[in-house]
Image (cartoon, rainbow, N blue to C red):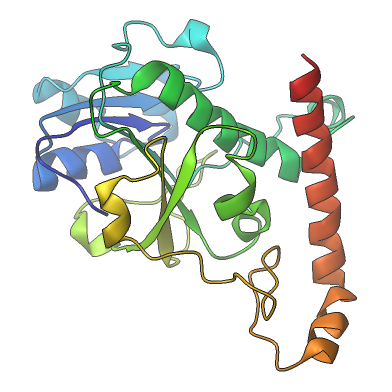
Length: 266
């Protein structure tokens, strides 16, 4: 992950705060503010080992009960202050009951809800958190496995906005000693899977773009939706287009477009 020591960093939804603690200790940004979705009591009860006190002892601001989708939860977060906002391995929390699942997924698929979380993160970061005169960057670190790879992260999230996808780079967890990727709902480590950090800015000519890799699955020989290819010939690609994987992705895209269309109607 590319971190400039002159940057002011905001971390979003950092479960046990181990990422923020490692970032502060080993990369030493100019300033760091950490946020957690859970309130402090739930955080301490859920994660027997956490870095809440570690950050407070280092005088790093920590805001618990922070929901990036709900401005009323942002408390004293400085507006238009940060250079980069980072969201590590985001995933909506598990539903507490079958009834809650039925209510929240009555009109939308869970795939759409996860995409909506990330899109809202991007929009709110550029509108509220990032300094107009700063680096103006958003990082999302995710995985190339289900369900993450079904969110079409590189193409779908910033659609119909002024936000530009700049590219990606591999996330090296070894550069963050002590960081543990946690299950979002319980005190359990997630299987160590290769991470990818995706980068956005509203500066289309951002100099960081030169240090990033461009989207790989572009052009007629590839399937952008499924992130597969290259195909040897047209017949191979047509066969792929009939697979369950591709048909599922087409369905996810159609559902996502419905949500974006509703956005435009508001």
